[in-house]
Length: 255
Image 1: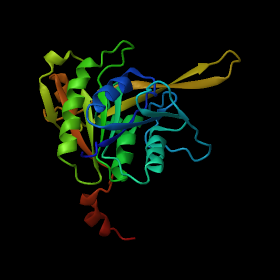
Image 2: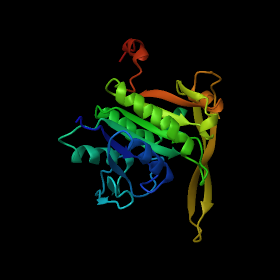
Image 3: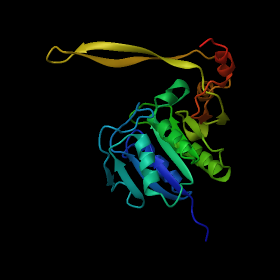
């Protein structure tokens, strides 16, 4: 009998989140699972790793049918832990999410969910991050399962080139209203930040980061446009941030 695919499951919303529960249900249809996820929400951690503190890993009783652990570290730490425990076998797939809130455009740089997928790609493992375009506490992840199922199936049958991962964003609509899946580029959009100054009960100043998301891209081939039109978006991501088109120009500078 052929060995089942080994799938590592993580996220940045925490091991008890609704999104990871939905992801686990679908991923379990395709293989054996190793679940390692943060013990608390880690949104906005980006590609942070724990270097000035210890990391604890505890067995989780939330998913008794699987090998599951809660981790005190970041989402990227979770992937590093998975590789530590799986020295004798390389995972066939890393799945991260389903994130509570979209990770479109520039948000991919801030997202712990997507950074876990990028870390998987760095390790040479086919990886994908899933996000639902809703921050509502009662968000329904049932429709997302349709997209997750299709993407996992394709990824296991059609291997990505090494060093790449996928960023999948899913509109907040019922499954029957989903028009399909589009491969896109990331929209040129930005967070217009605000730092709100406040005072605590002792009169000491503190700051609360806020802001608005600005879409400056009118293209019809972007992740934001796809979501608006009720498609799930798939954006290929790589971690090589070299601006190759500038190398020849900067070589002409007089250093």
